Image (cartoon, helix red, strand yellow):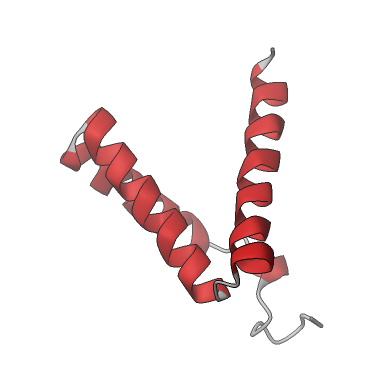
Length: 81
């Protein structure tokens, strides 16, 4: 499987898990996001160590602050969600 195909397959699995948490289990969107972020942080620390996990989360924060997801932001002035 190529990197792009693996990435797409992983994205589908994560989306399916998120839909299951909200749709079937009845978790709120906030709870689903909390669990995904907590799981991700714990996995990163256990695999790469705390320092690398912190750096990765800081890079994610910088990307969000830089506007990588602005088109998805329902609070952005020009977005119609």
